[in-house]
Image (cartoon, rainbow, N blue to C red):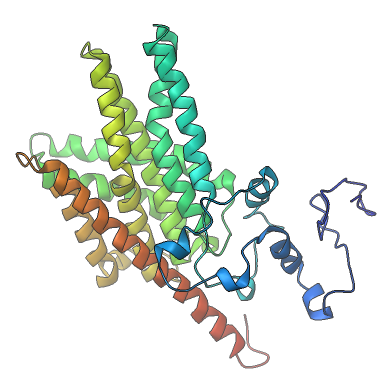
Length: 362
């Protein structure tokens, strides 16, 4: 479909030009619909039939599209959200549970690459594959988990570029902040202080990013927190993997990557996501104030996360792995609860918008 405005050649069935935004008007929509550019965009990217959408947080509903066949074009359409052209107005945001699926494809791609790196090291004995194996192994699961949070961000107001930026800059910044705190503590390092330091470092970094008025939704805090946590987790895993390799055992390297990958979704990614969402829950549309950190809605989540982190790092003979699995499950119960709160926030904002007296400020 060639755009009459800019001559850009678009894929078939596109309802507006992906280059200049020109609408391809048809007689199938009302004038009110045509007044919304995002209506056209939403029809372009939303492949979820309305009868399949559900506000109930049931696993069979949320993950119902994971095992369906999806084209590359569908993935490409997902990656264009969050720009100035494709960010919807609040009244156009759906407050029902999204149906993420791209995260599973990201994991499959990363797994294939990791297997290739593994064969290069173990089968062909080529040490040039080791750096790639460590990098892919460290980032695969954190990025997969982050993609899930990105797909669950119903406001669709954060672009992929921004997420990549937060993963790398937020990840390294939070680690450096944690090192400063550890240097201050010196010899007073134990599971409790580790939990406090690392979670405080991550939440400080998250606050830097969510202070932008564009990212005030609870789901935004959840996503940006997950991005910081993913960077922190990946860099940390890469470091531990290198230590395992320098110990002289390639098997320790594989074991480190394997177990840290299995447990990654319930660790730094989920914890930073929860504190990020909790901060957005108390910040709302107000300017940042340090008193917000004393708000019970935030402190309650932060304390729970710190305690989970401390318990996670506490060596308990014989049952440490079981404890970590239980904590991972608990973390995701809280994550889904926070997603539910975020969706209700969107619904409430839409109600307030529709009930606002005529002539009032938006």
